[in-house]
Image (cartoon, rainbow, N blue to C red):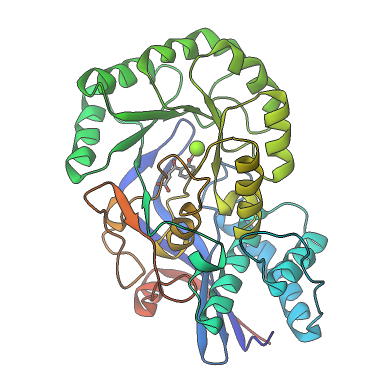
Length: 387
Ligand code: OSB
Ligand code: MG
């Protein structure tokens, strides 16, 4: 595998509106982009983390650090040794390219954890291989739908009334599924206001680990609102207490922060900690692990849906391709570019179709053309690594 040049960009792209969750507020997509130049092809990847250490321990700067000190040198070593990977024997509807398998082994051996840093490199490799083979990512991963059902994740607002206004703004744009960010005290009145005004809306909530098992009576009151699911009320490392909580609720629990691998999904399933899983390639270390999670859940009848990290059009292209797999049976957090940014980094911004879907890119690799001048404009720091 020949790579001529790797470039890291630390970018900061402001959101059209701040995004407030139970535990942090984001005002911009501040992340690391990975660019690979190889034989005339330019490929891109997006690391998952944002500026703050809140959703997980990873941040923009830890992503940069782990890439610079460990992961980029590992990739350089891998590329120059051109070590052959063993062939894949399982029969799957897709193939994990040997180069990706070799990268995953090398990255795993070099660095424990830091999935969001690893995912940025892995995404760029998929993009490079796809462009080289003239194959869209969707085809490489075995995706089947040309459009994927989507919704919007709505941050905490000043009041239930204001929240309803914001939600109605999105409904007017055509979004058919809404997710509300909640925290103790900013949950029941808010959810009630939206549910009362829209009895048939596909509605779900996300606690981002702001609750404790002792809050079970409060969470049980959410059962009155006919929600699709309650996402990650308890701690990221607390699959066990989610298993204690789920039997006390009618509403399905969905795990996000708790699931970093197929093993975690197995624990959750065997313990009865949730009935739905949110898959984010960024959170689980990349596209290959997301595929494995999808397969695992599908084989056991556990519905999954595509989450998001408020990615730019680069990361969102990968998420949309994956969301077209058959196991993704609930609408994803993959909104149109305009929900996030005044100007996205990709040439054809993602737009919402009237049936609350996004169209999956069909070009080779990620299938998006990155506007290099737009990237440069929002770049705070850039470093080139030559092979
Ligand atoms: O918990 O799902 C989450 C964004 C950043 C970090 C965590 C989460 C989110 C979202 C937004 O809910 C999803 C999106 O539109 O990308
Ligand atoms: Mg979540």
